[in-house]
Figure 1 (cartoon, rainbow, N blue to C red):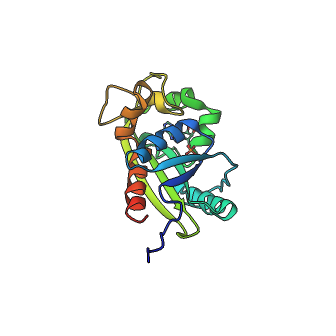
Figure 2: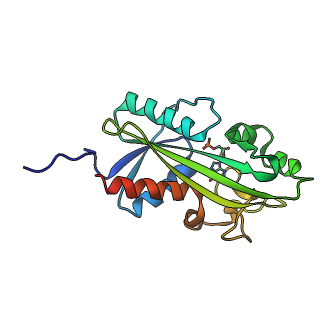
Figure 3: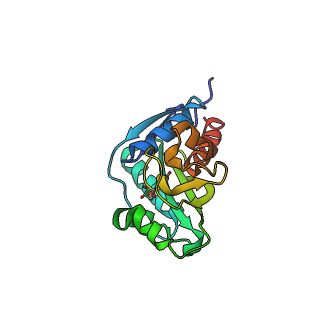
Length: 196
Ligand code: IMP
């Protein structure tokens, strides 16, 4: 008798996001492990919480309950050390309101430009209640916006591992070498493929 598979859909997971850049970054990382990513473009439940883990987990649990599929949700934030971790879990609101220009203005009198991105990938399925994977990339806030690739805060973030370029000056494959999201996704996909 063949043993029953833990995840019946095997090498296919559904990513709930409306951000096509995030989806494309994830698709490339999961493909490194021969896992296919499908885009599930449905409204995400967004709870207000100080923890990006709780935000991602709540959305993944809600989506799995509704669609009965193996689902990943990713939530990220930019934490600027000289601004005491701001904007952190409020990154999305801050991006939409004061934007990159606003962050650069706030940094005007701040000497310490160190910052990091944090990412949480929450996986949920009917077989696995919820499991979270974390990624973090250290870097600096640049003095000005540079580059046109990527999205969000990419034009003002220089990762420490490649300090002369912002994420927005990198191709997606290069950003994926360093990014918070790629790190969290690699942890997820390693766990997932060893449990299929
Ligand atoms: P979200 O809630 O995970 O979509 O992200 C919060 C905010 O951080 C949004 O404004 C995103 O544009 C921004 N953000 C998330 N990940 C990245 C990234 O990889 N690069 C640049 N900005 C990002």
